[in-house]
Image 1 (spheres, rainbow, N blue to C red):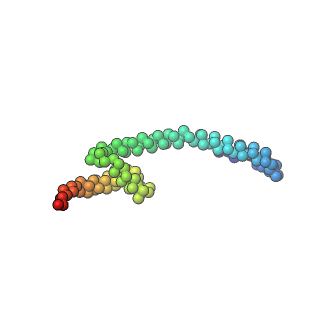
Image 2 (spheres, rainbow, N blue to C red):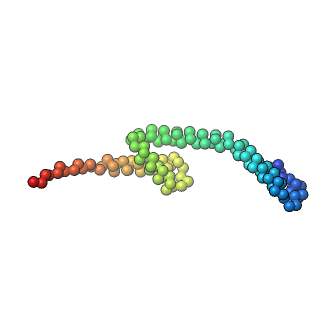
Image 3 (cartoon, one colour):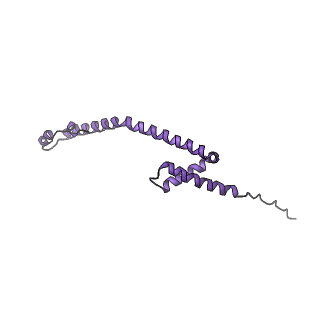
Length: 126
């Protein structure tokens, strides 16, 4: 970004007291320059986001390939992954998935040990 394209040192020093119209001209130049710089960066940002999405899809596919018993419990697994990621900021996503898979298996194991109790038939009072 080149600030000289907005205002040169010579222009700045010759301003004295800036008029409202002069302020509008320089403000418009600044906005135009900022928009141009943002648009130049956009292709790189979009490329990075696409690569990141593809990488996360690959990790997800690999995760469920390595943990097929979790595939039928995606809502629960998703919650555990989110909680694990929040509790470990900065941890590599692959490590988050590894830790979350252990926790998800533990939760599912505990759920499978819960026995459902059916209510006793009520007795009619006479």
